[in-house]
Image (spheres, rainbow, N blue to C red):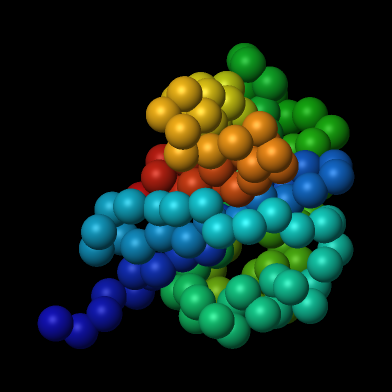
Length: 137
């Protein structure tokens, strides 16, 4: 079966101190957290794009509860523009309202089940990226 456009996607949850990254596949309908990286760490983004060869890139768009733009919305849009220019792949912005809350809930479940430890909390941003990607898939 030939691949259809945008089967595999890398997603990014852009924050001021860290960017969460996740990988997902439309065929399986699933996404998983990969890593976190510092903003503007383009060599690591280059490596992730080279390794996973995504068909599309997805960026979480932080909006206010009523759907309005905020300062972080512009940061996410700027990052999305840089991704598109750098990698020449489709970039999709996805409303990320409530993803941080959902990521915290899932992380708490993982801790309760023993699948994660407190020291893994830094990866919560990658989990948020996976949730953003799930919404897009």
